[in-house]
Picture 1 (cartoon, rainbow over the protein chains, first blue to last red):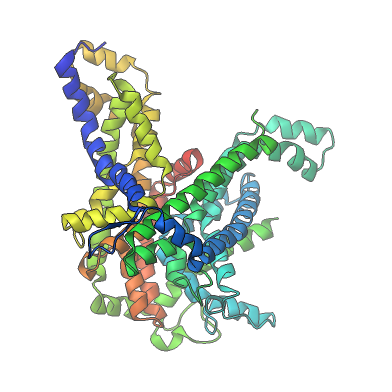
Picture 2 (tube, rainbow over the protein chains, first blue to last red):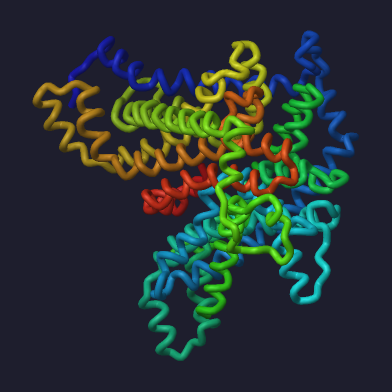
Length: 293
Length: 264
């Protein structure tokens, strides 16, 4: 089609590719590679970097803060993933019907998704305020003396999980809605004529046909939840008494407050490996429950 | 079922009303019990005081500048590279594309430490270029647009080449106009991602004069811990512009999430 040859062709390729490529190499590829290299060094940015081999990873094994942060991250995931998946699916099922005001409801659920995490976290920090917050006020109305939430090591993580579910329901809901709209109405109708109940139809038609979407939503949510940070940083800063310190907060603290560049890099690669392993694991597992066509 | 729906929708909306209502309260009613959802008296005093105590207009302008330049930069660099990957045959193309895909697998937190060191080395800490440039280049955006460009029929372009059009003309006059939905989708997500971003601005900016709204809000909260009307005024200012963008471009948000799990 295009009759360019040799130099002219190369020139055009460079014109189109170079701006993006140079930027990506400088701000992504090189940082990724040097992050890997950095894991073998100790560097406080003031004195020259010192090669310590696998020292950072040895330190990590004995770092109680790391194991605690890993535990808190997994606790967050274990609470957040089932809650957000189930509620989002429920909302999507309801909003997939021809209801009055469906557009308004969809927008209502999506509003937190487009709002900045920092703003949402501050809002909920206020709502969870032990004395003057809405949550404890409402609990008080039904005679429950609410906990101190973000100031209570037991209740801080549940509060963060609830806030995160609230923010992300709309995000997961939109994925489910797209999946539900791909299910032919005829299937449901035929089953209804055969006398299947709502629950039977949900179990035997909707869920299996929706499983590719569920898988997609699960993987995306899982990847995002390993990286949980903004809400924790704002709502508790990792406290109280370290009860909500998560992996990314641990990376930020090491890089930022303790100036341990090599150790921060090592932690970030552990995060990558965890995300990667979880994705591979889910992909393996999908054969058991995901049905394509 | 309708009742359940209404209750859960209220759970979504009431917190936002609470945000707005707190920001419109006078100091003595902020901590009033029982809480008032509809404040009386209604006052803009918190907004006025916020503007006096805090460079909030400057932060708003910073956010707007950063989000606009990031979005514009992403749309341009991603679409150019995507055009090359979709329409030009050159040696090493597939290997190069594979590198793009590989960077997608690495979480941003992995790059943040070396990126921070690079910024120090370049003297870009506390600068707009440090705040903006690292976000301008997106492997994901390139991938998204390339997939879209591949679906555009080649006939238009061939006719243009017959008329002697250059590569640039074809890219600018045919490919881009044909790809408006894909560009809009990438555009709204890169705008949202950069407007709402917290982690990178937290690393790279120290001075209040350079802060974007999310980092500014965190600082505001740190300084006036219990002045919730002030803090909520700040959150309203941060959230409102994105809500407007969302209402104007709903379909693209929905498309982006549904097709690719985009999260800005």
